[in-house]
Amino acid sequence: MPDFATTISGVHFNPRADLWDFQDGLDRVNLDFFQFKNQFSDSLIIALKAVLMHASQELAPRSLVELFKSTEKFSKSQPLTLRIEVIDETTLRRFWGDSSVYEGRKFVFKSMILRWVEHRYAGIEKSALQFLRKKKPRSRVVGESVLTWDPISGPLTDIEFKSFYESFVELYAKKQIQEQPFLMAWLVTSLGIRPRQVALLKAGDISKKDIGGTISYSLSIPRIKQKGQIPRDEMYEWPVLSEIGELLYAHGQKQKEKFAGLVKALDQSPLFSADRYAVPFVLQSESSREEIIGRDSNYYFSNDAGDLSYHMAVVSVIDVLREVFNQIDVSSERVGSEIVLNARRLRKTYGTRLAADNVPAPVLAAMLGHRDIKSSKPYIAATSRLQDRLDKTLAFELAPLAQAFRGEFLTAQDSASTGAIIRDLRVIPSGEQLGKCDKTGYCGYAAPVACYTCKKFRPWKDAPHELIFEFLWERRKSRSAEFEKDAHMTMLHDRTILAVAQVILECGGNVSS
Image (cartoon, rainbow, N blue to C red; front, side, top):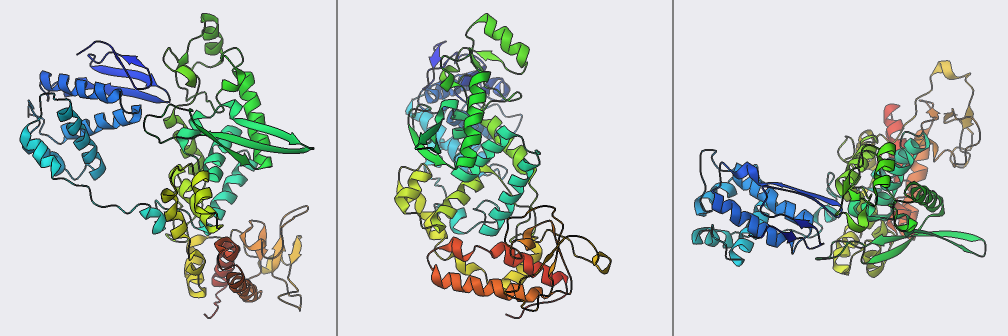
């Protein structure tokens, strides 16, 4: 085996070493072969290193790490006292029968054994190969979690998404979420991009245009998930809302200032960087080392980070997103507990919301960064009759779970309290009060529809909330007929309907179906 090897992206390492520890783009590769010393023979470890060395020249670093992790699982499934000279059918049966290892990991290991045999290294018995060739993964429905609206791993419903987004923006307004984490989470939520794409973004990717006094913003997004693809070798451009675009652009300018003198061109500054999470970057001079260490002791240096110097690692982006989502405490009307939030679910939600807006399949594929429209079909199929999911009976069943009503009830002692009186003469011509608003100053939302999901609303328990429910339900029915193919228009006030239903239930009332 050589003492020098190069990965597919050009990073050099020593394949003979018992510890492979290097940075490859946005990924940290840390493979500790020493853990196998007491269980695998020396010849088996050498062959394993050789197989993984070849894999490093053909696969992305994260795929290389997955192959190694599958070997770890194989090792842990064997008795500690067993000394393995060759991988045979017996050891594989033991591994395959280990219920603690999920199926996907087992088939990753199978792919490595097939690579092992392909390169003709010793250590694999013929019986092992015959055993593996009989193993087929269970058939999986493409986009199953989307098609079934899985409440844990599938897309958020319209009600769940509105609850999440309202809380997300509110936390940022209260400065409980800082600017950079907010922008990272916003990109994942509103553009459906993956954490790896967030990590790859540079300050120069956000552009600002002034055409006749009209300011517009757009973001160049790196395309990923193509085999053998070099990071940032292919980009696609997408418009960004002015309010967020202005914030993103200003953030990019600050990043350029932060990394002035440390990158060859200011546009090459990372759009997102962090004190606690930093990928090693190329050391450009001893003075730059001293300057950055003085400013941030959590940065560290390497000569192999290439064009992704100073960028956050993907795992660090995921950690930041997790911290943001963990602050958001909103309930799901489907499971009656806190909504599970992560980048993957929000990407699926983005796709289904686009499909609900009748975005054509080719455009939907482009907006999701897909090359093939086949990948976008589950989103369209999942939303085909989405607006028919809610009926009156279900609304009252879901209301206690959704917790869409966020205010507090007024009591007799509050009758003299200040606050704007909430009433609706369209629905209740007599002018009977529905409640009061604790908000001071101007409110631009339409009362009383917007009130029921607002923390400032304080309804009376004896008010005719049933009339508001009937009013909203009839509007929903008319929208369903008018906008038959537009699920979002039909579901526009579904969260409010659940909030009103919750108020009615807490008042001890009901509405017949």
